[in-house]
Image (tube, rainbow, N blue to C red; front, side):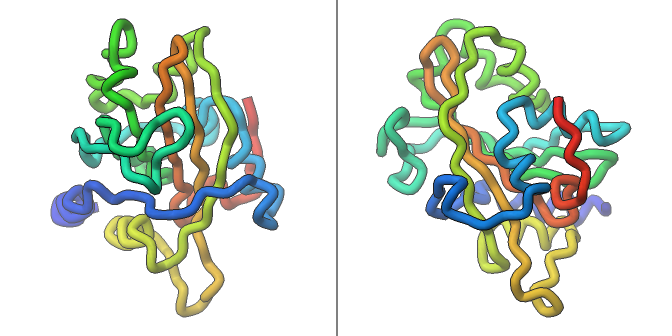
Length: 203
């Protein structure tokens, strides 16, 4: 990937995920991708299982009020949240776009470190914490008109709706609690990701 394309996709921050999240029972999905979407364990650890090299690229991070689309029973509309968007790579191929909402009210005590992760994967940090609680997983589908599809295109990924009009990307959203402090993480599997193959390695 050239420096120019790298710069271009960074300019898309914040990518955002304007979508209605649903219960996993809402969609009919192949068992392979569903296995990834509903995996309760660390996505970072699972990706590392399936590649030789893994790294995180931070697209951007800033503070803004939580929107109605992203609020839930744990994070309120208008509450100030730290937005963090990253790409997860396996063997230098983008696999996942992740968008995290970290309420400022949750970034106290030991959880202050979550505001200063740099290129550390969030999953690597939170899944090592014994107080971690994961609430329900919601899922959504993203078509060629979505902002994350524009990101995929800027990365040179194969999202060919002309030859395959039904092609979509799948994502999931979870609310986590660390010492009863909530935050939200949404993850979208990009085109050509390992999750769309028949690999279903689990921890």
